[in-house]
Image 1: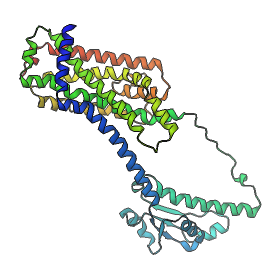
Image 2: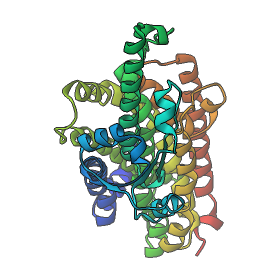
Image 3: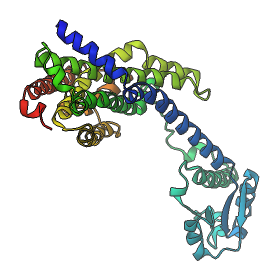
Length: 398
């Protein structure tokens, strides 16, 4: 045990001297996470504000049939009416971006409405250019308001009760708490973020302690020491694991600080987010991250030892990012839930279990299954790494 600790200290000291390792472990998550959140928040807010304040160009056909609707649109403001566009060309102009939208009132509309019948109003817009749905909402809400005005006049003229036309009054009751709603949104994103950063944090020291030492010719020196192969591999593995977990913890801290930088977030929401990222929750999520970090560390060290050079190790290990991203991304998909099958899928089970923890509705049977599968995976990967390190044809593969 003493030799393992000695090797661990020696390798940790060497790793901390490497600027690339320090950058990936500390600087990157501290800069990238606040940067991503700040950029996404500011861009979305700016685009939404711009869309709300923008003066839209709308082709209006058939205004003589509905002068009241035109007046209502005018009262809303921030709309430029285009009255001389041919009906057949409106769709083409909207597709090209020369118009924001179109409102078409067919002939006979006023007569139908006056006779207490239903008229048709056609709106044309380009959904792909209306990311926030603001243009669609502006057009439809105004038309609905005009529709309600006509209906109210009909009811008043006939001396009827408004409730006569509303046989059922639907009252929505959402029993999900604000925490559960936030967990549904953040539950997929957070583990995805931490899994990726755990892998990145473990990758560079892992590459350096295996392929890097072979390339520098220092592997033979450490192998000739009194320490056994098992001591050496466990010492190196411990450093890589430390780097991975440290990066995950720094990511947690960086995220917690980042959410407090935005005054736009309501205080009650901020309090829930803070509780979700509190020490107790971090400790729970960390128990899921640790076995995954063990797997990453063992896998990276195994592949690094196999590689002839640092460059070759990079080319082997880097594609693993894709393997990691796929199950982590699947966990972000709506409708994905933790069950007896998904609890056995590595990385995906971490993503879904984290979502359960954040929402406060934990199924301990499924969580036990998740932990069991993760520790089995971690144990097998570490066993294989030790076995791989004891093979001369792998260690001295130049």
